[in-house]
Length: 217
Image (tube, rainbow, N blue to C red; front, top):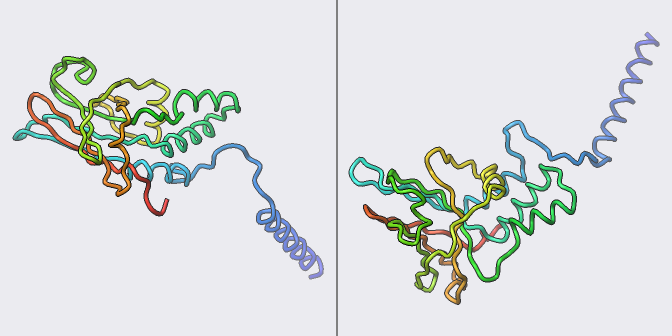
């Protein structure tokens, strides 16, 4: 009986020690924490912010698809959080992290950036990149001013970085990074947002996008 009591006492003390270590110590594991659902709290936070700044449109003529598109406003906060997560999951050292930030997340004072996934069954190639292309993209600013995109390129590093969280199906779509010159019309104190307009030979569509962060963010 005394032996059983001694054993139980040792187990109790051991349990107390384990609990004390669990609650009294901080983890020193530098690796990102993964959840059973496949989404960490950090990923969920970035994903929710991306959803807030996203929109999509589908245009049909009868039963035929004219085009489909989805867009994400690359706010400074979206770029910063995505960059931080990429650096953490890739275990980048400070120099590599700084290089990644300079390449993908540096705030640009003179332009506005969006990520666009675009699909059309049209046979034309690079339909948004050619100067004489029939498909055109314009941005309507909060004051009503309409401006044309000034660039369409997206690098593989940026594509992989954003798509790891966005998880857009690009089986048919092509991914673009759109740049628009920043003008006075960009100022949006009333949080009206902006409208991305796509026009083509068989139809047109528009996507309204929130550019101000959510109030509770």
